[in-house]
Amino acid sequence: MLVLSRKEKETLIIGDNITVTVNRVAGRRVTLGIQAPDDIKIVRGEIAEQDARRSAAMLPKVETDQTLVQ
Image: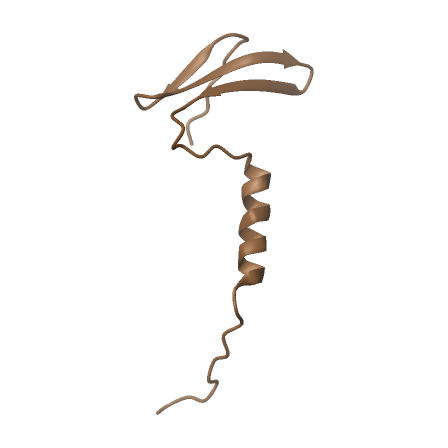
């Protein structure tokens, strides 16, 4: 993981077409602006985890054969 320090209004460039700007820092809260092409999905990490758990819960249960073949 790359860890960088940025101040308000400073940016990060990811690849050729994604820009992340630190809009505001207030106490322990940071707001970011993200510019990316429309085909790039941007989701907060906790939302992606919730979606993954929800998707896993919707998968059909697969029964396995517990007998061992020798």
